[in-house]
Image 1 (tube, protein in one colour):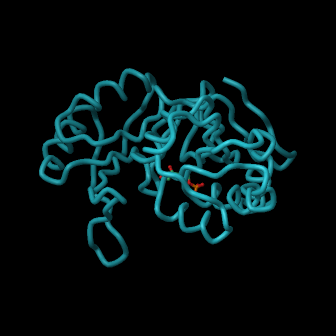
Image 2 (cartoon, rainbow, N blue to C red):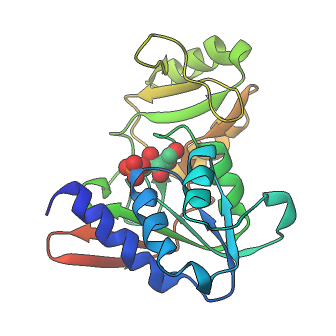
Length: 224
Ligand code: 5RP
């Protein structure tokens, strides 16, 4: 199966984790897009969605699915999202699609985090994928220097025209290469203390409850 077929497979499989009548949390990215398309086929069974990005909101609206603000919802039973990497304890690196801050906010409202990913995302130790960190622009150089002290190389994410990529919140992103994240919870907590960090792309405090992993043999379910 192609990577795209694996994404479609886990996108459909996630429907089994969507309780009827509920408002559910919806993440961002190409795998989640497949989930949103699958959700559209059962949209009358849910009350709506809370979205983690403008891109997902637009896709949900195109399918006629009601989208609520996080301010309108106290809890959601489930949050479905992809990951750039996931380890065997459910810790993730996220933010490849620049939506990490809103993803963490919606994940924080959720009882359960259902991660959907193809098998290329499963790793023993996080860090091969560059760690995204959303920052306040004026602090970017000093945050980059702190990462250098940890053995990482932080670069500002740029688009094809060379302009800094800005998140839905209007902030730039540093992508940090060269980290070996053996203790995700400890590093997440440390980075969160640095002035100017908006959100660190380590999801350890908000790790997955379950991962639906797309493999050539079908969907493998990892429970954490
Ligand atoms: C966006 C994310 C995505 O979940 C992550 O980048 C995975 O995306 P894809 O499903 O396209 O591989 O964190 O900020």
